[in-house]
Amino acid sequence: MIRTIIVGSGSYLPSKILTNQELAAMVETSDEWIVQRTGIKERRIAAEGELTSDLATIAAERALADAGYTADDIDLIILATATPDHTFPATAVTVQDRLGMHHGAAFDMQAVCSGFVFALATADCYVRTEQARRVLVIGAETFSRILDWSDRTTCVLFGDGAGAVVVEASEQPGEISDRGILTSHLRSDGRHKEKLYVDGGPSATRTVGHLRMEGREVFKHAVSMIADVIEAAFEATGTGPADIDWFVPHQANKRIIDASAKKLGIPQDKVVITVDRHGNTSAASIPLALDEARREGVIGDGQLVLLEAMGGGFTWGSVLVRM
Ligand code: ACO
Image 1: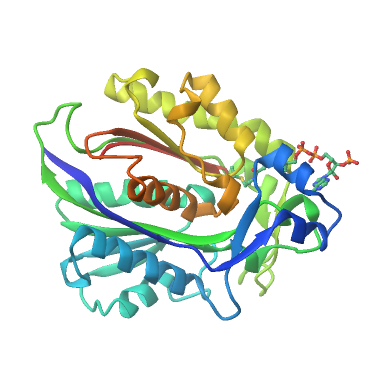
Image 2 (image 1 turned 180 degrees about the horizontal axis):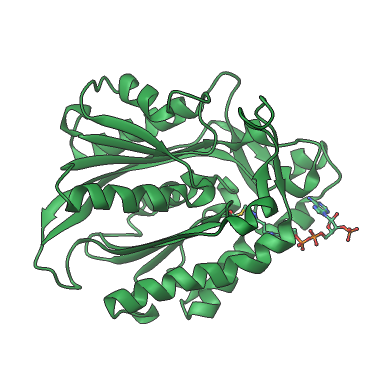
């Protein structure tokens, strides 16, 4: 059967680091509060004029180089973002042009923090139905642009960045030992949309707006929603926590990650953590973490990797992939 295998990854972080100490000079907060509640020590902030498409293009170029391909080899670009350059066209189209790609298709995926998982699952559908042979899947965000920098309950949590993977079709035996995406599970429930949202938009207010969140409510739902899609992945593949080599969760908050891993019986030493240095980069967090772990030789070929995210909507999802 055809499986969708990951053949390259890349990422990019803006050079400006914003520490908790610097934030404490901007709003009434402290390094101690932020670290204890979230595990975040610092995050990156895009430079003035540095756009989501700029971050995404560099991550994409690095993923292509890692895979040994050029844009000519790609059929489709799916870019997950909640912070597009403009209301339209899709930021994916800008990235396509910047890569010098003038064939195939490119579109954005909007599932906020779950965006990369949704994009990867969508790419898998295109590949397995033979509508695309090779797809560039990107998660890129400039959340610094939609934060209310006077709201200490939200501005300390997020950061900017981008990550990308190249996936392609590969004939595999159809076993659990196959390389590639073994299963994916996507969910959303709009009843929760007011718990985490942006209070502006082209149709509603003709403005961009700022991120608003009921932090406790998000926290309350996150762990059970994450467990739901991970248990679905285990059930679909007959696997369990003992089979997982690496857990690469969306990096929202160290406490959510710890609680989810504990609930699922995934040991701490199998969990990839970047939230301390990146903050929550929304759709970029998983490909950033995955790329870092691959480059450092932490995640290697043949290993079973569980990706999971939960975010605004609410949306949540999982992908189980053998590297
Ligand atoms: N610095 C200092 N004090 C703060 C800060 C801050 N940055 N932010 C809030 N506080 C204060 C509050 O005002 C409150 O004070 P009060 O008791 O005098 O009213 C107190 O700290 C406790 O506030 P809570 O909101 O109850 O704090 P909590 O322990 O729940 O932590 C947090 C807040 C970190 C946001 C937590 O609810 C959380 O992690 N929620 C999940 C949200 C999340 O990760 N969202 C990311 C997007 S969704 C996703 O990606 C999954």
